[in-house]
Length: 274
Image 1 (spheres, rainbow, N blue to C red):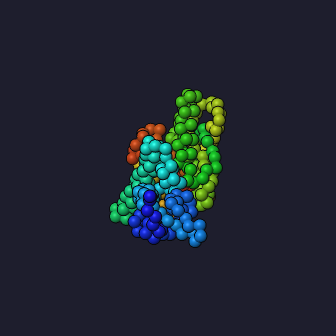
Image 2: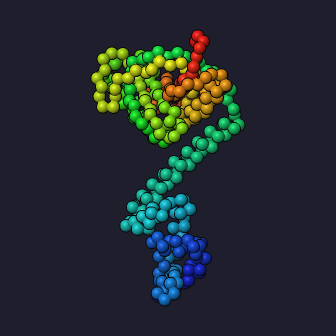
Image 3: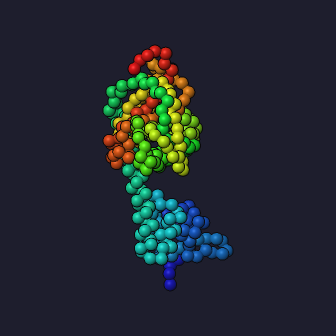
């Protein structure tokens, strides 16, 4: 016959608080072996201690309750291990992102970079093919890769003559409100057959302050900040989309360290600097 212990004794044995045990009962994760119908007291048995220990360890790894339930309800060790491994993979990915963010912050605090040069450039209207969409800020990287890949495939499939680096136009609303219009384009020459999302497009003329960013797009916000500060100090900024030119990107090199991106800020110019 199994021994019966109070929730307090079971709490000490399992190293789970009474409050936590009550919550686990309420959500159906770890139910008492018996509940007194008269007073509602919860009782547990000693053979529930291993289950409680498993739950405690899974929760210490930040596994959601629904997944802990899946582990406990798994029909066999293979199914159980699959749920655990998937969670561990997510933890490792989050840890990698945290390490990267810590490294970037240390670089920012401990090794300030010398000011980068700024080029002033006049851009004339340029024929291109493009894809335009309204994009959520958190989705923009995935959208960017998919849209640029589609444009590059169109250039190859139709034998178009690419006349310059691919680029992008990004409305200020993306940064201000988290959602706005984005356009990626490839300058081309020759007749274009519009297919799917790809349309003919003219990159508009503009006066720009341009700064080059080298490496992964994960740190491109630092270059944006430096260029924005320069424009605030030395130029008159004007309304208009921010621009990027992809001198070297994922379709050129799989290693983000090798990527090169020009960031261009629209400005008002009354001189003839080049």
